Image 1 (cartoon, rainbow, N blue to C red):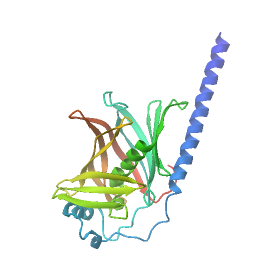
Image 2: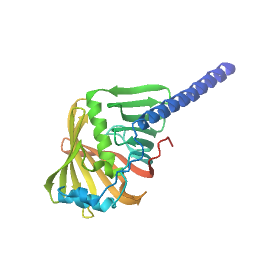
Image 3: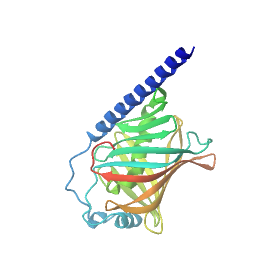
Image 4: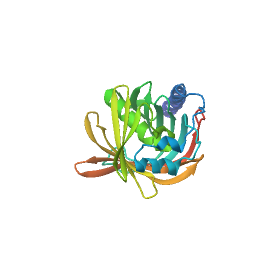
Length: 271
């Protein structure tokens, strides 16, 4: 019996190690696929003259977070820690994550780890996907489709506050006046028409983004992203804390709180 148990646990350990190596290999390959969408470092630079005609709070925002001749950001990588709820009614759990973005072609991949669970969100090759893996062995969630395309692209757009040249007007992105402290951001891409109502605080920083996203597969519900603790990193002023919530049945449910630990631009490789 002792020999059997030794063999059993030895095989289980080997399977876990192989699973960890395999999923690390897959993730590294997916990160490389994200960066195939990156363009060479651009000579394009931001100038205050570009802001003419934009709503006043939007102009103030860009003047507060960017400097004249700020190069456009093409790719991003970051790490974070924080807390996360696997369901809005469950308890908070510690999380660590890493994320990779490109801007010219919208794409990203995020991996977060909570105990023995590993989750991946991605928008890659114009497709959104969510994968949750248990103990480096079993995919317990593996979903994609039109609704996830919308949700993951909205995530990429909201998290552009970490690389704000991506929020400057473009072929796909427009700003529309609402009032002195808010504006509507619209993004048109691959047949999708996305939007955020963006609110600005007394420091002219974005502090809230609100939209409707697909909740649990098929229902549009209000989603809220909040931005805090702006710092200048790599010459750009960005929020280092972001909070995400669903607004359901007249109640706001927070489910994610991320703290940026490290962020780099134009480094097209995995940490």
